[in-house]
Length: 100
Length: 121
Length: 166
Image 1 (cartoon, rainbow over the protein chains, first blue to last red):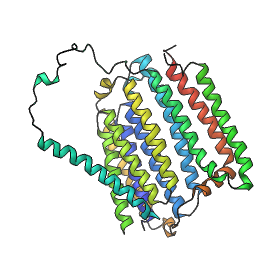
Image 2 (image 1 turned 45 degrees about the vertical axis):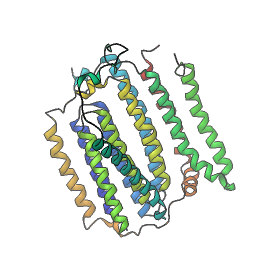
Image 3 (image 1 turned 90 degrees about the vertical axis):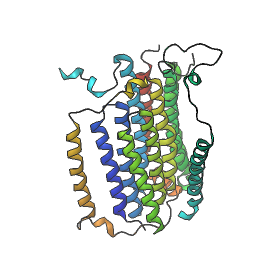
Image 4 (image 1 turned 90 degrees about the horizontal axis):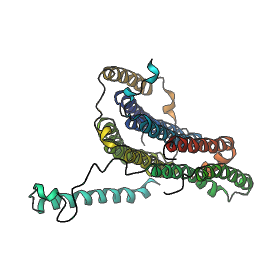
């Protein structure tokens, strides 16, 4: 049997990689992919606890997380397309209108 | 049990191995003689103007993909719903609730239709 | 034992492809690496006796979300995206803060006071019917709220993307 801590450690490592991706990349698409990675690592944690505590709630929560992630991606990529069409920018360093 | 998933894994492994092996073996056997003319349009046609990657894919594709993703998520809820419909105690409530769910999503589809997002110009 | 071997195999591939996602320059390559990573996560869901979530992971994430990402790379000009380099100023901060937080969490997970490790894992797979029964009784209201969320996402995305093609 694989112990619970292994799954948690895997989720943690993937979450950290996603966080590094959000912090070090400028490309918005790759930042969004990193956010997806972080959401997935959270799903691993939820399903792992669901499995080890023998409780189906973790899986229900994971289903809702996946749904929210899909909605988030649809809106975020819509915003990205609007941004590129109106401003022609692709990196977060160029979106600084609110900076004053 | 988990053993029943083993054929899936074996098939993935075999297909991956086969793909890599075919590419590798053919790279050993084929003649390698690259030169510039091989990359040019041959005999007929003209030199391409501009890049192929700017503005040839329309936002239409994206709108269709969004509608696809939303209704894909709907199927994610349809599967458990279909399974529990056999259970008499909650099937009526689940049936009605699912149609409310589909109705709310249909409003979005009608909106997209009315906005002309489904027209293929 | 065999299960541990398969877990380690999937985990190593998942971490490797996740590292590829954040380090490759071309967004298309990143997206393909992310697909590889998500497939490994689906395999890990199978190891966790959750076949329904594994299937959902494949057909929502790999089948729809990543296709949307690839479509956006197609619709936008990829050359501009390709030329992106890594920013200079924030890197050291990211590299410094993330291992600190990571080691902290690992210390919590593998520490003595983490008591969730005493539980025995369930042997049976979670049936879709069990999931559906919980979803349509206890979680009926969240389920309906999800439809509103999806409607809002659909309308918002269409408004955002539609702006200039009247």
